[in-house]
Amino acid sequence: MTTAWCEHPIHRLATAIETREVWVREVVDATLDRIADRDASLRAFTAVLSDSARVDADRADQEIAAGRYRGPLHGVPVSIKDLIDLAGVPTTAASRVTGRAPATSDAPVVARLRAAGAILIGKCNLHEFAFGTTGEDSSHGQTLHPRDPNRSPGGSSGGSAVSVATGMAFATLGTDTGGSIRIPAAACGLVGLKPTFGEVSCDGVVPLAPSLDHVGPLTRCVRDARLVYRAIRDHQGGEPAPINGADQTLGCPRPYFLDRLDDEVRAVFERALSRLTDADWTVEDARVQHAHDAATIYLHLVLSEAATVHTAALEQQPQDYTPAVRLRLELGRYVQAEDYVRAQHGRAVLGRAVDAALAGRAALVLPSLAIPAPPLGATAVDVGGQTESLRSIMLRLTQLFSTTGHPAVSIPCGLTSTGLPCGLQLVGHRHRTCQLLDVAEACETALGGG
Amino acid sequence: MTLDDWLVAAKSDADRRALPELKPLLDALADATRALRAASWNHHTAGSRSAVDASDPATRPDEPR
Image (cartoon, rainbow over all chains, first blue to last red; front, side, top):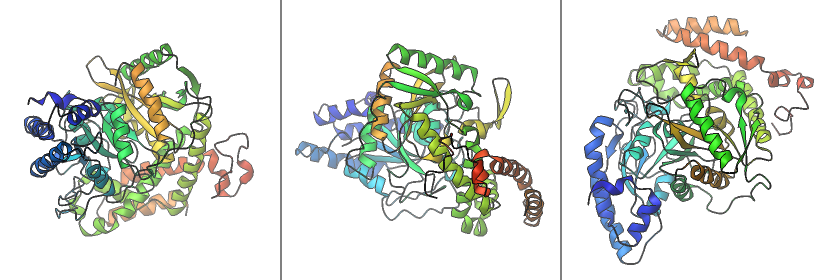
C-alpha cells in the first residue's frame, strides 16, 4: 500500500482495520517506510522498532481475523517519548548520562497501550531530560520542524510531535512538566493533552520534577487524544458530574496571558475567538489572580526537584550532561528550602485562583504558545517590540497549569502568514479531563478541524 | 541568611567548583527569589496572616497546609 493511510486520524484508521479494509501489517510497513523516508533529516526518533513492530502487526492481524478485535487502538502505530520505559530498549532521555542498558520492563502507560493493541513503532527525541523547550540540547541531535528546517518544533516532546505531524506515528506519548506536551503540539499543529495531575501514571518515566510531571498524548485531533487518554489513565471509571450551567461559556484570562504575544499569534487567536462566538460559545473576560507570579513559583519548584533527581549524576558524571542542562540542574542546588516551601504555598494560591477563574465556566481559553515555532539557536526573541528570553516566553502560557495540575489541552487554531501553526489552549476543571475534551472537541469543530 | 548574603556565598561556591558560568544564572535566580518573597500572598507564610486578602479567593487560607 502507499503511505496515504499515514495521514489519517486514528478513528478513521481503526474502522478500516476493524473491517479489514487494511491489514495492520500494511499500516506498519507504510509507517516504517515513512520513517525511512523522513526521519534522517528530521531526527524525530531515537530508536525505530522495525522488527518488533512487524511481529506485533502480524499478531494483531491474526487476532483481528480470529474475531478478537480489542478496540480502536488495535494495530495502530504509536511512538513514545524516549523518557518512558519500553522493555528491551534503552531509555536514553536524550542524554549520555543514562547509559544504554535496555529497560527491563514497560512503564505502566506503555503496558496499557500494548494491552489496547497499539503497535510501539519507536522512541522519540527530546530536550535532554525534558529540561528545555527547544530540543537543542539532545545527545541525538536537534529535531527539526517539519515545515521549516531552520526552526525548532518546540519541546521538550519535540520528536514526539514531529513523529505525528509527519505521519511517522498516529499518536505519541509525551510528558509535560511546564508545557512540554502543549508547546510542541502548538508549534506543530497538533492536539496535545496534559491531563489532570496524577491521572496518568508516571512510573517508569524518568522524572524531571515529580510534583509537576504529567504524561499525555499528542494526536491529530481531539477524538484521537481521548482514545489514547482513556487507554492510559489509571482510573478507568467515570468522572465527577459536569459543572452545571457552564456548558457554552469560556473565560479568556487576558491580563498577563495576552500581555506578551507575537502579533501574528495574537491575530490568529482573536480570529479563533470570533469563530467560537460565531458557533454560539460565550467568551467572557476572566482573570487568574497572581498569574504574574507563576514563573517564579514554577522556577523554584522545578529547579529544586530536578536538582534532587540528578544529585548523584551531577556528582559522578557531570561531563556527560549537555552544558546548558547541567548548569540549570546545578542552579537548582542553590535554591533554599524556605523558598521551595514558599513556592509550594504559591502553588496552592494559584490553584485556587484558577478554580475561581473557572467558576461558572466550562473552560479557560488562551493561546498555548506566545510565539510561532522559534528559530534554531535563538536565545531571545522580539515579542510585540520587546526582547524576551526564549525560555521564558516559551513557558509563559503553560507553566501555571502544570503547577496547579489543572487539565489543559492545545488544539490547532490557525497559521501565521508563513504557514507556522498556532495553538489554542483550553484549561478545564481539575479531575474533569473528559469534560475538557468534550469542550475541546466542540471548539475544534467550530474552528474547522477534527 | 539574607538574599544578598546568600548570593555572595553562592557565587563564591560556584567559583570554588569551577563553574563561573553559573554566576549570571545565580543573579537571575536571586531576582526570582526576591519576587517570590515579595509576593502579596506570601505575607502570611512569613507570619502575618492578617495580610491575607480575605476577599481574594486565591489567597483565602481555606486548604489544609
